[in-house]
Image (cartoon, rainbow, N blue to C red; front, top):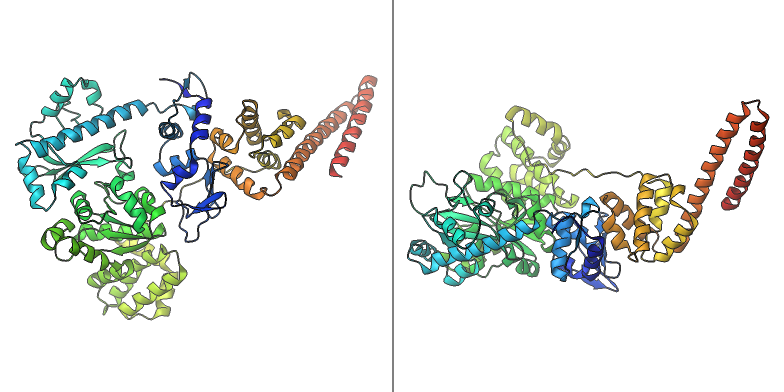
Length: 604
């Protein structure tokens, strides 16, 4: 398999993919007439402005302006390339992709797709092997006993495919080579040491397979159980791999996603065992970041389905820091937050073991609002009877106020701060207005940094009259473009973006695949796609008139350019005394007069 995905294959995938079904896996949709609507997964909103058209095979948010085809949606939600999105949807639709030796670079197959599939298959196989070693062998018996002592049942062991990696670091390599896996391939999988290729990365550890959203094993985590604790980290986790990015994966999301949708909430846990304990107690909407701090990509994964995020991190210094940072990130994404207080045990597994499943349900019900949590922690650090303590507490709390979406909520939280620290509300408002200067001074004095969400830069396209005219012709009815292409030619366009779009439309028209979806799939510029979708909204009620006006505008502009060219030539010839040139001036003058009459008629 080599080269580029053929355009015919892309069109077939687009035609056979139900955009409503695909998007509903990520966003709860409600049918309204012929369209479907829901809350946008790309920005915070309470009133749905995100719309999906089954007929046009497009999505569009009237709130933030995003939109496109099913390929665009999958690319954004899964954080994958365009070819990878095609391949993913082709597999779902049962379409056999065909490849050519040439084509648009954007359509080139993912060169790593086959390798990813082979590695994922190996990880699934390895997880089964480790599970067997844990549950069926004497070597793994001590690890199984540890799990059972922590209250984890055999059913849970099987559900999460927990395992044991043998202490013999060469065992896994020997086993897989005997199964006809080449050493060259195994070296690419992340399962073995880079320095010693036949040494397993994980050995003598309790293993936690990490699943993707589809339920395939894509990575591993291993817990240290015995030996010299000072020489081995407690947890050893797969790093970023060709098939796995830890910052955009959540542990147990494949098990939790349905419950997250149903309960409209999610629990972010500290680690594997915490998450497993919640699930065993029937709290199925728990997930965990993977060996790293919570990321914005992980929040995006759950955002379309939740009204509130619950944070269940440790109560130590590192856990408190992680909780504060997570609160700011979740609030910045427009999601309410509650914090779980794990009283009665050091982690959910211990609470479950000591007091039973009902105790974990209770700690969730007793979770406190994030602003109350932050204020309680500030009162522990900064004394309220100290002017300096009051000032520092305010500045730290201001970073929380900054990420709140509601002015009313921001004012209420500021009042809570003033009550807790016995501060005059008006004075606090003044300090909040000057927070940037005050915070900058604090940072300069302490070297402290705060969480600040990055705002991605977007490409800008200058929308000329020509480009707007061509964009207007993009609709589900090929007759509109046929009318335009019959009356104007590519040479009559001067705007490069307009020309590029005209060519795409012409190609779609000639091969019988003219539709907004297919045109958008051929556009490389995300900004161009946005402009096309926005234009459809603007002219949805009278596309025919808009197209006619656009054709008239392009032809008039072309005629005016011809007039300017004639005038320049006439001026050049008038400088010459040669009779032949003067005769040519007369002919040019007649041509210009004819063009002026045509332009006047167009202006009507």
